[in-house]
Amino acid sequence: MLPAADGTFRLDADVFDYTIIALYFGVVLGIGVMARRQISTSLDFFLSGRSLPAWVTGLAFISANLGAVEIMGMSANGAQYGIATVHYFWVGAIPAMLFLGVVMMPFYYGSGVRSVPEFMRKRFGTGAHLVNAISFAVAQLLIAGINLYLLATIVNRLLGWPLWVSLVVAAAIVLSYTALGGLSAAIYNEVLQFFVIVAALLPLTLIALHKVGGWEGIKDKVQPNQEQLSSWPATDLTGIDNPVLSVIGIVFGLGFVLSFGYWTTNFVEVQRAMASKSVSAARRTPIIGAFPKMFVPFIVIVPGIIAAIIIPEIADLKSGQGGGDVKYNDALLLLMRDLLPNGMLGVAIAGLLAAFMAGMAANISAFNTVFSYDLWQQYVVKDREDGYYTRIGRLATVAATLLAIGTAAIASNYSNLMDYLQTLFGFFNAPLFATFILGMFWKRMTATAGWVGLISGTLAAVAVAFLSEDSFGSASTGVLGISGQGASFVAAGAAFVVDIVVSVLVSLRTRPKAEADLKGLVYSLTPKDQRIDPDEGDTSWYQSPTKLAGIALVMVIVLNLLFL
Image 1: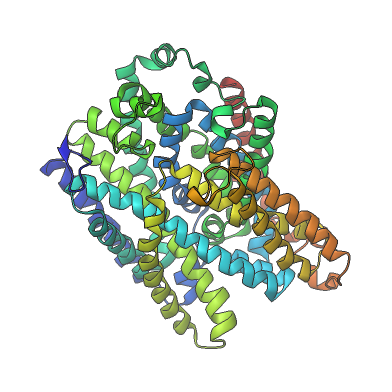
Image 2 (image 1 turned 90 degrees about the horizontal axis):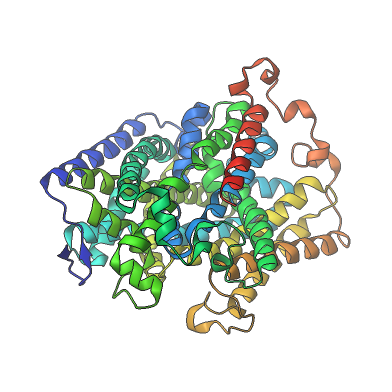
C-alpha cells in the first residue's frame, strides 16, 4: 500500500496496469471521434437520430445506471447493511423498469417528444414544464458531481495527485467524448463499458468469495449479526426500528415512489429508450436491461459484504472502532488493493473508470438535451436553425462538466453516497412521478395542478429531510428521529402523497384541457393501436415486450424468495 498525496491509501498499479487503462481510454476517445462523423442534425446529437437497435439501447440503459450508485454506493451499502441492499435492485428497480417498458414507453415514443419535460409541457403546459426542466437540470448536475468525485478518487488513488487536480483531469476525459459525439458516443461507450465493468467485478467477486470460504464462509463470519444475511425486515438499512414500518418504508417508499419515480420519469434512462428505432424497440429497451440488472447485486453487494469481513479498516469502521480516514465508499477499492495482482488490477481499475464515466456521461448527455430543447429553445432563443441548437448542446456539455466539478465537493462530504443520492431522488423524482402518473391516468388533472403539485411535493420532501437526523448535516433538527436511507424513503413517500393530494384539490377547482388535446397523453384517451407496434403480434417471444417482461418478473420473484 502506497501513501497518496492526501495521506490516504494508494492502489499499487504497475506499468502493465497503466497500459491497460491507457488502451481503454484510447478506445473511448476513438468512439467519440467516430460518432462525431455521424452527426448532421440536433436529433443525431441529442437522440442518436432514433435509429439504434433494442439490444444496444438495452445495454446502454443499464450501463448508464452502472455508475457511482451501483458500484461504490451499493458496495458501501453491502459493507454497512449487508444483503438487504438487494432491495434497491429486486424491489426498487426491476418492477419499475418492466412497467416503463410495458406501459409508459409507448406514450413517450409515440408522442414524438424529445425529453420527459417536453412530455410534461404537452400534458400540463409551460408551468409544470419549466419546474420539471429546471429541477431535472439541477439534479443532473448534482448527480454528475457524485460520479465525477468517485472518478477523481480513482485517479487520486492511482497517481497520488491532489483531489482537485484529479477532478479536473477526470472531467476533461468525459467531456472530450461527450461533446464530440453526443448521445451516440455516450451510448456506444456505455455498451463497451458494460462489458468492461463485468470483466472487472466478476473476477474480484470470485477471488473474494474464495478468500472468505464461499457463501458458507460469509455466514460463519457475520455471526452473531445474522440480519446482515437476510433481506427482510431490513431495519438496519432503513433506520426504522419497527419491523412492520421498515417493510412499509421499503415497499412504498423505495419499491413504489422512489423506484417508479426514478425509472419511469428520469430522462437519463428514458433518453436511451427514446434513441431506439421503433416503438417496439423502445419498449424492449428497459426490459432487456432488467435481465442483467437483477444479477448485478452478486458482483457489487457481495464484494461489499466480504470487504466488511476481511478488510481491517472497514471491519473497524463497522464495529465502531473507527477506520481512520476510510469510509464505506472505499470498500471496493480496498478489496481490489488487497486481493488483485497486477494486470487484473488494471482491468478492475478500468472497470471502475468505465462505470463512473458511464454514469457521468449519462447525466451530462441528458442535461444538455433538456437545457438545449426545454430551456434554451423554449424560453430563451426560439426558431433558430437546427445547427444552432447543436452548438448550444455542446456548450451546455462544457458548462455542465465545469459545474459538476463544484458539485463533486458536496458528494465528498458523505461517508455513504447512497444516503446523499436517495435524498436527491426524494426531492426530484418522487413528486415528478406523482404528477406524471396522476396526469397519465386521470384526464381531469389540470395544468395548474401539474406545477403546483410538483412544487408542493418537493417542499414536503425537503421538510422531512430537514426534520430528520442527518439528511442536511448540522442543519437537520432530528425531530422525526429517523436517519440515513430510511429518512429518504419517508421523504419520498411524503412528497408523493402531498403531490397527489394537492394535485387533486387544485384540479377540482381549475379547468382541464379538452379531451381532444390529450390524445396520446392520457391512457384512456389513447387508442390501443397507438400504444403498441402494429407488427408486435407476429414477432417471436424474445421480441415481445410483454412476454419478456413476464419472464423477468418471474425471475425476480424467485430471487426475492431465495433471500428472504
